[in-house]
Amino acid sequence: MRKKFAYLLGLVMLLAVALPACSSQKSAMSTTPPIRADIVSKAGDKVLLQNSGSAQAKESFCPNEIVTAYRYTPDRLNSEPTGKLRLSNFIGDKFTDAFVVDGDVKPGDVVMKASAECLTQQPTTVE
Image (cartoon, rainbow, N blue to C red):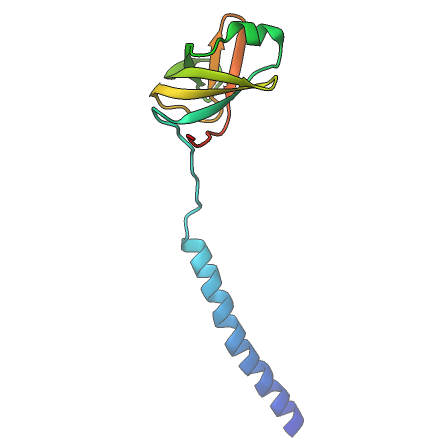
């Protein structure tokens, strides 16, 4: 009988220690809001544009040219201008450096011109 009592007492003490630790973690997790950050590039920031890699894209976009960036609405049917970019130089076949001149640009914004377009990638730091 004494062994059963000691066993039950040990189990109760173990639960008494373990349950508050678990419950405090749950309450901390439930009160912490999820973190969501949108990377927004402002005037003077350097961004990376991705194009199709075709010769037509390289012919359409020229270094030091000012182009407009557009952001599509959630339904993807309409777009609105969000900023202007000054193209810098091509990096390989598919990427172009650009600097934000006016407005703000987010990853996923599109730079369109004639029959070519570029997709805005994550911004890079100004060197």
